[in-house]
Amino acid sequence: MGNHEEFREYVVTRGPALLRAAHQLTGNPSDAEDLLQAALAKTYVAWDRIQDRSSLDGYVRRAMVNINISWWRRRKLQEYPSDELPEVPFQQDVRHHHEDLERALERLPVRQRTAIVLRYYEDMTEPEIAKALGISIGTVKSTVSRGMAKLRGDMAVQPSLN
Image (tube, rainbow, N blue to C red; front, side):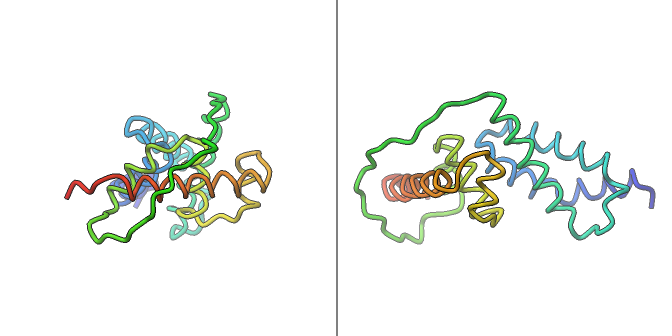
């Protein structure tokens, strides 16, 4: 099978899952498509150098994270979490679904969403996140903590649509 055909088959097979990961990073469907397209373009250029085909998803996800961080830095968004969070107890509810969590993630500021996705979806350590985002480990800890608190509050407050 030629490289072009092998790449096309990979994109057709793994594209939807990779698009979901891109959407979790960006919080916006249009930005997610742009991010995935940019990451796939980088992957296509490096296709011959990627020896282990089983690591392709990781390669594309890492490219998405790096590209998203680059875009985020370029925009120089200055979003700061609130110092005051509502004291709403979190109650487990079987009606909360993955879609509710994705909507809650989309409502987070970009920096919090990125830190949480890197920590819990990409399973990166705090030092790795600090290096990737160009911030201190303490800032990573507080950003993730505030984002998680906001998610817990949001998930407890938001009624399930099901």
